[in-house]
Amino acid sequence: MPNINTRPDAPLVDAHAHVWTNDMPLAPTAWHRPPAEASIEHFVQTLDTNGVTFAVIAAASIYGTYNDYMIEACRRHRRLRTTIILRPDHPFADMKAMADQGVVGIRLQLRNVKDIPDLSSPEYRAHLGHIAELGWHVHLHDDGARLPLYLDALEASGVKIVVDHFGRPDAETGIAGAGFQRLLRSVEKGRTWVKLSAAFRLPSEQLRAEATAALLRHAGPERLVWGSDWPFAAFESSMDYGQAIGSLARLVPDAAARRRIGCETPLQLYFT
Image (cartoon, rainbow, N blue to C red; front, side, top):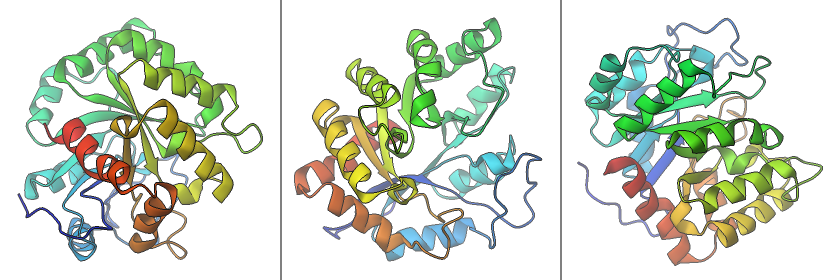
């Protein structure tokens, strides 16, 4: 493993980033075509330049169930972990083999998906049971208003749940919205974490600040992790890694809480 970082302004763990190459197969439903590669080598160099020691790669929905490159990243760099996208009928024996290669969870990227999966179906119940048995988590992404569609079934399955991007609270209802409030209740049950990731994807600085404050009150830093969302898909020309680190410092000015979010909580969640 690399040496622990010494930069006081940098998180130790980036819990949400992506890697891809130009020759990876885009899914037919891909919402974005990256303008440049985000190679494993470039990502590791970016981590080193910014004093970040460990990272968790998030499976990118634009590549569907193609997971080879993310798993390769974990094989080549023990400082990395990854989530993957699988069909619910994927063989359990194959999943167990992946657990030895750095896979720590299954991503459900459901934003903009019209046909919402029935997580209470026998097929998904079996799949979620496999995920729980492996000690993996379900890495959930959707607009905040739709989170209640999934949380009951996920909580009943016994899996760990990690929700992306502040829970993406609605621009109109904000943190008072039913979806965000349901997320807070899920966190209080003890098996749900939330990523303070991709703050730039929320519609306003005020909403980012309000969501962060609410999550800190209801969840505490022991249920929060930070992620850059590198290489900032669809925001490539307006975001950089230093800005992503700076957003955490603005939103969580308390150094002890920030250390917990950027270091202790994600190390325990992903690397133990």
